[in-house]
Image (cartoon, rainbow, N blue to C red):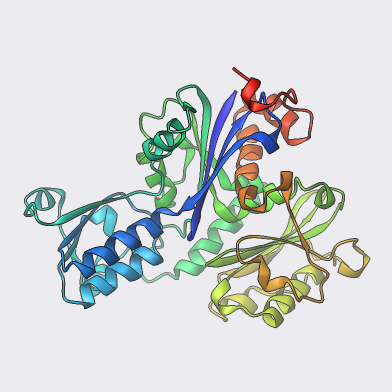
Length: 381
């Protein structure tokens, strides 16, 4: 049984091809530039060549692509976007137009001159991934499932803070269940407000396998729990320090006890330690984070977690985990199955096991060390 897992971040997209016949450490992996970085590079090249650009496709992650699109417009070169593509930068199309991007209908886009560079936006490009694997004689035509993780602010109503909207969504999911897999959905169950997750579903037609989509940060935290040193602690504080967002969960036997989410760019070591200590103590207030331009905090169980009594203080994962290297909180850098970069993919595997019962047993066997035959990959059919 094979499952393709794709964790789409700001800097990279991290890809694991899970094969139940292999030990997880032997699974095939790719760590390659993220889709938004690819668009960023294409736009920068178009700016250098003074070329008009059309952005079409679906809503995808912004960040680097947003900055490059804005820079292209500010340089005085035409840039057009269809409505769905334009929402990659802002759900308010008037705000997109204010960036200098001309929003055009699909029909108007077709009529643009052939000299206009056409870039199709999408977070998940199955054919590109399949073609890459095919170059190494690995086929993706027999998948049992596909799992894709992206970060989704959701589509906030006009005049409503997108940060508060995102945190309202986190609270709603955790009120339903305190499991990290609460942030994963089968394709047909994705909430309508989660437009980036919906766009992944829309751009995944023809994959020929069930699709699960998930939020990136909970996927990374869930994956980090499969580091045996992390799993051994009944209660733990886990921080995913991402390129754009830092999200920390306090976890216990009953699941999620507390959570906060902030923007990594607004954090230094002292501020991050202060937030983590307050989350552990159960005293962190939503306003402490939200009023500092973060998303917020939620405490469901006020029972303090004494980090000094733990073998490891704070469990850390994420591409900017180096922020915690000099921490006094005794950080432990999780390496599930020997690979931090694929932590989100391991988390997605666990979520697939929760959402698709017929795939549960082989996935759980692998995640708990009983999967695979121990046979080297070159001896597996």
